[in-house]
Length: 146
Length: 309
Image (cartoon, rainbow over all chains, first blue to last red; front, side):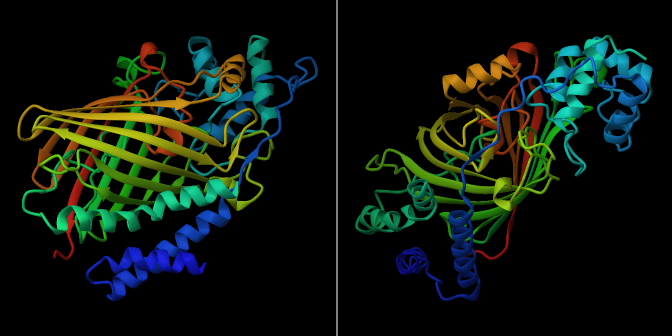
Protein backbone atom coordinates (compact mmCIF):
# COMPACT_ATOMS: atom_id res chain seq x y z
CA UNK A 1 0.00 0.00 0.00
CA UNK A 2 2.90 2.31 0.77
CA UNK A 3 4.23 1.62 -2.70
CA UNK A 4 0.88 2.47 -4.20
CA UNK A 5 0.79 5.73 -2.30
CA UNK A 6 4.12 6.86 -3.67
CA UNK A 7 3.03 5.78 -7.14
CA UNK A 8 -0.02 7.99 -7.09
CA UNK A 9 2.00 10.83 -5.59
CA UNK A 10 4.31 10.64 -8.56
CA UNK A 11 1.39 10.76 -10.95
CA UNK A 12 -0.29 13.66 -9.27
CA UNK A 13 2.85 15.60 -8.48
CA UNK A 14 3.27 15.99 -12.18
CA UNK A 15 0.15 18.08 -12.25
CA UNK A 16 0.84 21.72 -11.74
CA UNK A 17 -2.05 22.30 -9.38
CA UNK A 18 -1.42 19.21 -7.37
CA UNK A 19 -2.67 20.65 -4.13
CA UNK A 20 -6.06 21.78 -5.36
CA UNK A 21 -9.00 20.20 -3.54
CA UNK A 22 -10.38 18.89 -6.82
CA UNK A 23 -7.23 17.01 -7.66
CA UNK A 24 -6.94 15.71 -4.13
CA UNK A 25 -10.45 14.36 -4.47
CA UNK A 26 -9.60 12.86 -7.82
CA UNK A 27 -6.54 11.24 -6.32
CA UNK A 28 -8.65 9.66 -3.62
CA UNK A 29 -11.22 8.59 -6.18
CA UNK A 30 -8.61 6.97 -8.41
CA UNK A 31 -7.01 5.24 -5.44
CA UNK A 32 -10.41 3.95 -4.39
CA UNK A 33 -11.24 2.70 -7.85
CA UNK A 34 -7.96 0.84 -8.23
CA UNK A 35 -8.43 -0.66 -4.77
CA UNK A 36 -11.97 -1.78 -5.58
CA UNK A 37 -10.73 -3.24 -8.84
CA UNK A 38 -7.98 -5.23 -7.14
CA UNK A 39 -10.21 -6.74 -4.49
CA UNK A 40 -13.19 -7.36 -6.77
CA UNK A 41 -11.42 -9.24 -9.54
CA UNK A 42 -12.34 -12.93 -9.59
CA UNK A 43 -12.43 -15.70 -12.18
CA UNK A 44 -15.44 -17.97 -12.00
CA UNK A 45 -17.21 -20.15 -14.52
CA UNK A 46 -20.79 -21.27 -14.35
CA UNK A 47 -21.45 -25.00 -14.21
CA UNK A 48 -22.19 -26.91 -17.39
CA UNK A 49 -25.83 -26.65 -18.39
CA UNK A 50 -27.74 -29.89 -18.19
CA UNK A 51 -27.57 -31.61 -21.55
CA UNK A 52 -31.08 -32.99 -21.35
CA UNK A 53 -32.69 -30.32 -19.26
CA UNK A 54 -36.28 -30.94 -20.14
CA UNK A 55 -38.16 -34.07 -20.97
CA UNK A 56 -40.53 -32.80 -23.61
CA UNK A 57 -42.83 -35.76 -22.98
CA UNK A 58 -43.53 -34.72 -19.40
CA UNK A 59 -43.27 -30.93 -19.55
CA UNK A 60 -46.57 -29.07 -19.64
CA UNK A 61 -46.52 -27.52 -23.09
CA UNK A 62 -49.78 -25.80 -23.77
CA UNK A 63 -50.33 -22.53 -25.55
CA UNK A 64 -52.08 -21.17 -22.49
CA UNK A 65 -49.07 -21.75 -20.29
CA UNK A 66 -46.58 -20.50 -22.86
CA UNK A 67 -48.47 -17.36 -23.66
CA UNK A 68 -48.88 -16.63 -19.95
CA UNK A 69 -45.09 -16.71 -19.63
CA UNK A 70 -44.77 -14.37 -22.59
CA UNK A 71 -47.37 -11.97 -21.21
CA UNK A 72 -45.69 -11.90 -17.83
CA UNK A 73 -42.16 -11.45 -19.09
CA UNK A 74 -42.41 -9.86 -22.51
CA UNK A 75 -45.64 -8.00 -23.23
CA UNK A 76 -46.49 -6.57 -19.84
CA UNK A 77 -43.96 -3.84 -20.44
CA UNK A 78 -43.23 -1.44 -23.24
CA UNK A 79 -41.75 -4.24 -25.35
CA UNK A 80 -43.42 -6.60 -27.79
CA UNK A 81 -46.97 -5.37 -27.33
CA UNK A 82 -47.43 -4.45 -30.94
CA UNK A 83 -47.52 -0.74 -30.22
CA UNK A 84 -43.97 -0.53 -28.92
CA UNK A 85 -40.57 -1.76 -29.96
CA UNK A 86 -39.69 -3.99 -31.70
CA UNK A 87 -42.61 -3.95 -34.07
CA UNK A 88 -41.53 -7.06 -35.94
CA UNK A 89 -41.72 -9.17 -32.79
CA UNK A 90 -45.35 -8.46 -32.03
CA UNK A 91 -46.53 -10.73 -29.22
CA UNK A 92 -49.76 -8.87 -28.47
CA UNK A 93 -51.89 -11.94 -29.22
CA UNK A 94 -51.19 -15.65 -29.17
CA UNK A 95 -51.73 -15.83 -32.91
CA UNK A 96 -49.21 -13.08 -33.58
CA UNK A 97 -46.76 -14.72 -31.19
CA UNK A 98 -47.07 -18.02 -33.05
CA UNK A 99 -46.75 -16.28 -36.39
CA UNK A 100 -43.53 -14.63 -35.26
CA UNK A 101 -42.04 -17.98 -34.27
CA UNK A 102 -43.13 -19.54 -37.55
CA UNK A 103 -41.55 -16.74 -39.56
CA UNK A 104 -38.48 -16.17 -37.39
CA UNK A 105 -37.71 -19.53 -35.85
CA UNK A 106 -33.94 -19.21 -35.87
CA UNK A 107 -34.01 -15.74 -34.35
CA UNK A 108 -36.42 -16.90 -31.64
CA UNK A 109 -34.18 -19.87 -30.89
CA UNK A 110 -31.10 -17.68 -30.72
CA UNK A 111 -32.54 -15.06 -28.40
CA UNK A 112 -35.13 -16.90 -26.33
CA UNK A 113 -34.48 -20.62 -26.07
CA UNK A 114 -30.85 -21.04 -27.13
CA UNK A 115 -27.89 -21.50 -24.79
CA UNK A 116 -26.92 -17.83 -24.96
CA UNK A 117 -30.43 -16.43 -25.07
CA UNK A 118 -30.51 -12.80 -24.00
CA UNK A 119 -34.23 -12.10 -23.79
CA UNK A 120 -35.91 -10.54 -21.92
CA UNK A 121 -33.19 -7.99 -22.18
CA UNK A 122 -34.13 -4.81 -20.39
CA UNK A 123 -36.43 -3.21 -17.82
CA UNK A 124 -34.72 -4.78 -14.82
CA UNK A 125 -36.58 -8.07 -14.79
CA UNK A 126 -34.77 -11.36 -14.20
CA UNK A 127 -33.86 -13.61 -17.05
CA UNK A 128 -36.08 -16.59 -17.79
CA UNK A 129 -34.89 -19.75 -16.09
CA UNK A 130 -33.32 -22.44 -18.22
CA UNK A 131 -36.23 -24.77 -17.39
CA UNK A 132 -38.71 -22.18 -18.67
CA UNK A 133 -36.72 -21.66 -21.85
CA UNK A 134 -36.57 -25.40 -22.38
CA UNK A 135 -40.31 -25.68 -21.89
CA UNK A 136 -40.83 -23.04 -24.57
CA UNK A 137 -38.42 -24.92 -26.85
CA UNK A 138 -40.40 -28.13 -26.29
CA UNK A 139 -43.63 -26.34 -27.12
CA UNK A 140 -42.15 -24.94 -30.33
CA UNK A 141 -40.65 -28.33 -31.17
CA UNK A 142 -44.03 -29.98 -30.82
CA UNK A 143 -45.57 -27.54 -33.27
CA UNK A 144 -46.97 -25.09 -30.71
CA UNK A 145 -49.98 -27.21 -29.65
CA UNK A 146 -52.97 -25.54 -28.01
CA UNK B 1 -4.58 -14.47 -10.44
CA UNK B 2 -2.68 -11.99 -8.31
CA UNK B 3 -0.33 -11.31 -11.19
CA UNK B 4 -3.24 -10.56 -13.49
CA UNK B 5 -4.72 -8.14 -10.97
CA UNK B 6 -1.44 -6.36 -10.45
CA UNK B 7 -0.70 -6.27 -14.18
CA UNK B 8 -4.02 -4.70 -14.98
CA UNK B 9 -3.77 -2.25 -12.12
CA UNK B 10 -0.35 -1.25 -13.35
CA UNK B 11 -1.68 -0.94 -16.88
CA UNK B 12 -4.26 1.49 -15.61
CA UNK B 13 -2.04 3.65 -13.46
CA UNK B 14 1.67 3.03 -13.54
CA UNK B 15 2.55 4.14 -17.07
CA UNK B 16 1.82 7.66 -15.97
CA UNK B 17 5.01 7.61 -13.95
CA UNK B 18 7.15 6.61 -16.89
CA UNK B 19 5.37 9.07 -19.09
CA UNK B 20 6.39 12.00 -16.97
CA UNK B 21 10.06 11.11 -17.28
CA UNK B 22 9.82 10.39 -20.98
CA UNK B 23 8.00 13.57 -21.77
CA UNK B 24 10.44 15.63 -19.74
CA UNK B 25 13.28 14.18 -21.75
CA UNK B 26 11.45 14.58 -25.02
CA UNK B 27 10.05 18.03 -24.73
CA UNK B 28 12.16 19.69 -22.05
CA UNK B 29 15.23 20.59 -24.05
CA UNK B 30 13.94 20.91 -27.53
CA UNK B 31 10.30 21.69 -27.24
CA UNK B 32 10.19 24.04 -30.20
CA UNK B 33 11.21 21.54 -32.87
CA UNK B 34 9.52 18.57 -31.16
CA UNK B 35 5.94 19.67 -31.23
CA UNK B 36 3.35 17.03 -30.43
CA UNK B 37 1.14 15.96 -33.32
CA UNK B 38 -2.43 17.01 -32.57
CA UNK B 39 -5.83 15.78 -33.71
CA UNK B 40 -4.76 12.30 -34.76
CA UNK B 41 -8.43 11.51 -34.29
CA UNK B 42 -11.17 14.06 -33.76
CA UNK B 43 -12.90 12.25 -30.94
CA UNK B 44 -12.02 10.03 -28.01
CA UNK B 45 -13.59 7.12 -29.88
CA UNK B 46 -13.20 5.99 -33.47
CA UNK B 47 -16.52 4.10 -33.71
CA UNK B 48 -16.50 1.20 -31.27
CA UNK B 49 -12.80 1.52 -30.50
CA UNK B 50 -11.09 4.08 -28.36
CA UNK B 51 -8.86 6.57 -30.13
CA UNK B 52 -5.62 7.93 -28.71
CA UNK B 53 -7.27 11.25 -27.92
CA UNK B 54 -8.03 12.47 -24.42
CA UNK B 55 -9.91 15.54 -23.30
CA UNK B 56 -8.14 18.76 -22.51
CA UNK B 57 -7.84 19.88 -18.92
CA UNK B 58 -11.15 21.16 -17.58
CA UNK B 59 -13.12 19.89 -20.57
CA UNK B 60 -16.35 17.99 -20.03
CA UNK B 61 -17.50 15.73 -22.83
CA UNK B 62 -21.15 14.71 -22.91
CA UNK B 63 -21.45 11.69 -25.15
CA UNK B 64 -24.41 9.81 -26.50
CA UNK B 65 -23.99 6.64 -28.50
CA UNK B 66 -26.81 4.66 -30.02
CA UNK B 67 -26.97 1.41 -31.96
CA UNK B 68 -30.20 0.58 -33.75
CA UNK B 69 -31.57 -2.84 -34.68
CA UNK B 70 -30.49 -5.04 -37.58
CA UNK B 71 -30.60 -3.16 -40.86
CA UNK B 72 -31.34 -6.28 -42.89
CA UNK B 73 -31.85 -9.99 -42.21
CA UNK B 74 -34.76 -11.52 -40.30
CA UNK B 75 -35.16 -8.65 -37.87
CA UNK B 76 -34.49 -5.81 -40.29
CA UNK B 77 -35.76 -4.53 -43.60
CA UNK B 78 -38.61 -2.18 -44.37
CA UNK B 79 -40.84 -3.58 -41.61
CA UNK B 80 -38.53 -2.12 -38.95
CA UNK B 81 -37.54 0.82 -41.13
CA UNK B 82 -34.18 -0.88 -41.52
CA UNK B 83 -33.63 -1.26 -37.81
CA UNK B 84 -34.62 2.26 -36.83
CA UNK B 85 -37.59 0.97 -34.83
CA UNK B 86 -35.32 -0.99 -32.52
CA UNK B 87 -32.41 -0.11 -30.30
CA UNK B 88 -29.78 -2.65 -29.43
CA UNK B 89 -27.68 -0.46 -27.14
CA UNK B 90 -27.58 3.10 -25.85
CA UNK B 91 -24.80 4.74 -23.88
CA UNK B 92 -24.80 8.10 -22.15
CA UNK B 93 -21.51 9.29 -20.72
CA UNK B 94 -19.87 12.19 -18.96
CA UNK B 95 -16.13 12.31 -19.43
CA UNK B 96 -13.79 14.90 -17.96
CA UNK B 97 -10.21 15.97 -18.58
CA UNK B 98 -8.25 16.22 -15.33
CA UNK B 99 -5.12 17.23 -17.19
CA UNK B 100 -4.41 17.52 -20.89
CA UNK B 101 -3.39 13.87 -20.84
CA UNK B 102 -5.54 12.25 -18.16
CA UNK B 103 -9.30 11.88 -18.43
CA UNK B 104 -11.88 10.00 -16.40
CA UNK B 105 -15.52 9.28 -17.04
CA UNK B 106 -18.69 7.56 -16.00
CA UNK B 107 -21.38 6.15 -18.22
CA UNK B 108 -24.60 4.23 -18.24
CA UNK B 109 -25.29 1.78 -21.05
CA UNK B 110 -28.32 -0.32 -21.75
CA UNK B 111 -26.03 -3.21 -22.60
CA UNK B 112 -26.47 -5.90 -25.20
CA UNK B 113 -25.43 -9.47 -24.67
CA UNK B 114 -25.27 -11.39 -21.45
CA UNK B 115 -25.59 -8.31 -19.26
CA UNK B 116 -27.78 -5.23 -19.40
CA UNK B 117 -28.11 -2.12 -17.18
CA UNK B 118 -24.42 -1.32 -17.17
CA UNK B 119 -22.54 1.34 -15.21
CA UNK B 120 -19.03 2.14 -16.32
CA UNK B 121 -16.11 3.99 -14.74
CA UNK B 122 -13.25 4.71 -17.12
CA UNK B 123 -9.84 6.29 -17.21
CA UNK B 124 -7.56 7.14 -20.11
CA UNK B 125 -4.01 8.43 -20.05
CA UNK B 126 -1.88 9.70 -22.89
CA UNK B 127 1.60 8.38 -22.13
CA UNK B 128 3.46 9.47 -25.23
CA UNK B 129 2.58 11.80 -28.06
CA UNK B 130 3.76 11.52 -31.62
CA UNK B 131 6.01 14.45 -32.50
CA UNK B 132 6.21 16.48 -35.68
CA UNK B 133 9.92 15.75 -36.13
CA UNK B 134 9.31 11.99 -35.78
CA UNK B 135 11.61 11.68 -32.77
CA UNK B 136 8.56 9.96 -31.31
CA UNK B 137 6.87 8.24 -34.24
CA UNK B 138 3.90 6.88 -32.30
CA UNK B 139 1.40 8.05 -29.77
CA UNK B 140 0.82 5.70 -26.83
CA UNK B 141 -2.32 5.94 -24.72
CA UNK B 142 -3.73 3.54 -22.12
CA UNK B 143 -7.39 3.01 -21.43
CA UNK B 144 -9.11 1.08 -18.68
CA UNK B 145 -12.64 0.65 -17.47
CA UNK B 146 -14.62 -1.24 -14.88
CA UNK B 147 -18.24 -2.11 -15.61
CA UNK B 148 -20.92 -3.37 -13.28
CA UNK B 149 -24.40 -4.58 -14.14
CA UNK B 150 -27.37 -3.80 -11.94
CA UNK B 151 -29.72 -6.30 -13.59
CA UNK B 152 -31.57 -8.83 -11.49
CA UNK B 153 -29.89 -12.17 -11.04
CA UNK B 154 -31.07 -15.26 -12.82
CA UNK B 155 -32.12 -18.12 -10.57
CA UNK B 156 -30.26 -20.66 -12.70
CA UNK B 157 -26.59 -21.13 -11.88
CA UNK B 158 -25.48 -21.99 -15.44
CA UNK B 159 -26.78 -18.65 -16.73
CA UNK B 160 -24.35 -15.80 -17.35
CA UNK B 161 -26.58 -13.48 -15.36
CA UNK B 162 -26.54 -15.62 -12.21
CA UNK B 163 -24.93 -13.42 -9.56
CA UNK B 164 -24.24 -15.10 -6.26
CA UNK B 165 -22.07 -12.21 -5.17
CA UNK B 166 -21.42 -8.63 -6.19
CA UNK B 167 -18.12 -9.31 -7.92
CA UNK B 168 -19.88 -11.64 -10.38
CA UNK B 169 -21.45 -8.53 -11.86
CA UNK B 170 -18.17 -6.92 -12.87
CA UNK B 171 -16.12 -6.86 -16.07
CA UNK B 172 -12.99 -4.93 -17.00
CA UNK B 173 -11.07 -3.68 -20.00
CA UNK B 174 -7.39 -2.76 -20.25
CA UNK B 175 -6.13 -1.38 -23.52
CA UNK B 176 -3.03 0.17 -25.06
CA UNK B 177 -3.67 2.47 -28.01
CA UNK B 178 -0.75 2.87 -30.39
CA UNK B 179 -1.48 5.59 -32.91
CA UNK B 180 0.14 7.44 -35.74
CA UNK B 181 -0.97 10.29 -37.94
CA UNK B 182 0.32 10.18 -41.51
CA UNK B 183 0.29 13.73 -42.82
CA UNK B 184 -3.04 15.50 -42.60
CA UNK B 185 -5.11 12.81 -44.26
CA UNK B 186 -4.64 9.42 -42.64
CA UNK B 187 -4.51 8.33 -39.00
CA UNK B 188 -4.18 4.74 -37.80
CA UNK B 189 -4.32 3.03 -34.43
CA UNK B 190 -3.56 -0.46 -33.16
CA UNK B 191 -5.19 -1.51 -29.91
CA UNK B 192 -3.90 -4.53 -27.98
CA UNK B 193 -6.75 -5.24 -25.58
CA UNK B 194 -7.39 -7.37 -22.52
CA UNK B 195 -10.89 -8.13 -21.29
CA UNK B 196 -11.60 -9.72 -17.93
CA UNK B 197 -15.05 -10.92 -16.94
CA UNK B 198 -15.35 -12.07 -13.36
CA UNK B 199 -17.99 -14.67 -14.08
CA UNK B 200 -18.73 -16.35 -17.39
CA UNK B 201 -20.83 -19.28 -18.52
CA UNK B 202 -19.43 -22.77 -18.94
CA UNK B 203 -16.66 -22.96 -21.55
CA UNK B 204 -16.47 -19.20 -21.95
CA UNK B 205 -13.28 -17.32 -21.09
CA UNK B 206 -12.76 -15.07 -18.08
CA UNK B 207 -9.71 -13.54 -19.72
CA UNK B 208 -9.67 -12.65 -23.37
CA UNK B 209 -7.07 -10.86 -25.43
CA UNK B 210 -7.89 -9.05 -28.64
CA UNK B 211 -6.22 -6.77 -31.14
CA UNK B 212 -8.07 -3.88 -32.66
CA UNK B 213 -7.23 -1.55 -35.51
CA UNK B 214 -8.79 1.82 -36.18
CA UNK B 215 -8.38 4.34 -38.94
CA UNK B 216 -9.49 7.78 -40.00
CA UNK B 217 -9.28 9.02 -43.58
CA UNK B 218 -9.93 12.72 -43.88
CA UNK B 219 -11.90 13.96 -46.88
CA UNK B 220 -12.16 17.60 -45.92
CA UNK B 221 -11.72 19.88 -42.95
CA UNK B 222 -14.91 18.57 -41.36
CA UNK B 223 -15.55 15.20 -42.94
CA UNK B 224 -13.72 11.89 -42.53
CA UNK B 225 -14.20 8.16 -43.05
CA UNK B 226 -13.63 6.15 -39.86
CA UNK B 227 -13.19 2.38 -39.58
CA UNK B 228 -12.40 0.01 -36.73
CA UNK B 229 -12.08 -3.74 -36.35
CA UNK B 230 -11.32 -6.14 -33.51
CA UNK B 231 -9.88 -9.63 -33.61
CA UNK B 232 -10.70 -11.39 -30.32
CA UNK B 233 -8.59 -14.43 -29.44
CA UNK B 234 -11.15 -17.00 -28.34
CA UNK B 235 -9.94 -20.52 -27.73
CA UNK B 236 -10.91 -23.06 -30.37
CA UNK B 237 -12.50 -25.38 -27.78
CA UNK B 238 -14.71 -22.51 -26.65
CA UNK B 239 -15.68 -21.65 -30.24
CA UNK B 240 -16.51 -25.28 -30.97
CA UNK B 241 -18.60 -25.66 -27.83
CA UNK B 242 -20.71 -22.58 -28.52
CA UNK B 243 -21.09 -23.39 -32.20
CA UNK B 244 -22.35 -26.80 -31.15
CA UNK B 245 -25.00 -25.02 -29.09
CA UNK B 246 -26.02 -22.68 -31.88
CA UNK B 247 -23.95 -19.60 -31.09
CA UNK B 248 -21.22 -18.33 -33.35
CA UNK B 249 -19.01 -15.39 -32.48
CA UNK B 250 -17.95 -12.79 -35.02
CA UNK B 251 -15.33 -10.10 -35.13
CA UNK B 252 -16.65 -6.56 -34.64
CA UNK B 253 -16.30 -4.26 -37.62
CA UNK B 254 -17.46 -0.65 -37.77
CA UNK B 255 -17.48 1.77 -40.70
CA UNK B 256 -18.64 5.33 -40.40
CA UNK B 257 -18.61 8.93 -41.46
CA UNK B 258 -17.34 11.49 -38.97
CA UNK B 259 -18.59 15.06 -39.16
CA UNK B 260 -17.16 17.85 -37.08
CA UNK B 261 -19.35 20.87 -36.45
CA UNK B 262 -17.81 23.26 -33.97
CA UNK B 263 -18.10 21.80 -30.47
CA UNK B 264 -19.79 18.69 -31.77
CA UNK B 265 -18.29 15.62 -33.32
CA UNK B 266 -20.97 13.51 -34.92
CA UNK B 267 -20.36 10.10 -36.38
CA UNK B 268 -22.87 8.07 -38.33
CA UNK B 269 -21.79 4.48 -38.56
CA UNK B 270 -22.61 0.90 -39.44
CA UNK B 271 -21.44 -1.96 -37.29
CA UNK B 272 -22.26 -5.61 -36.69
CA UNK B 273 -21.86 -5.23 -32.92
CA UNK B 274 -25.00 -4.77 -30.88
CA UNK B 275 -23.13 -3.54 -27.80
CA UNK B 276 -21.19 -0.34 -27.28
CA UNK B 277 -18.83 -1.14 -24.39
CA UNK B 278 -15.60 -3.07 -25.07
CA UNK B 279 -16.46 -5.48 -22.26
CA UNK B 280 -19.34 -6.78 -24.35
CA UNK B 281 -18.71 -6.17 -28.03
CA UNK B 282 -15.26 -7.78 -28.07
CA UNK B 283 -16.11 -11.15 -26.45
CA UNK B 284 -19.84 -11.39 -27.16
CA UNK B 285 -20.58 -10.26 -30.72
CA UNK B 286 -22.82 -12.90 -32.28
CA UNK B 287 -24.14 -10.95 -35.26
CA UNK B 288 -22.55 -10.83 -38.66
CA UNK B 289 -22.46 -8.47 -41.60
CA UNK B 290 -22.97 -11.39 -43.96
CA UNK B 291 -26.53 -12.05 -42.76
CA UNK B 292 -27.54 -8.42 -42.72
CA UNK B 293 -27.03 -8.19 -38.97
CA UNK B 294 -25.41 -4.81 -39.06
CA UNK B 295 -26.96 -1.64 -37.84
CA UNK B 296 -27.04 2.07 -38.02
CA UNK B 297 -25.50 3.83 -35.10
CA UNK B 298 -24.31 7.24 -34.10
CA UNK B 299 -21.93 8.79 -31.64
CA UNK B 300 -22.48 12.38 -30.59
CA UNK B 301 -19.92 14.26 -28.57
CA UNK B 302 -20.55 17.71 -27.12
CA UNK B 303 -17.72 19.32 -25.22
CA UNK B 304 -17.99 22.01 -22.57
CA UNK B 305 -15.13 23.95 -21.08
CA UNK B 306 -15.44 24.01 -17.30
CA UNK B 307 -12.25 25.79 -16.40
CA UNK B 308 -9.43 26.17 -18.80
CA UNK B 309 -5.78 26.69 -18.23
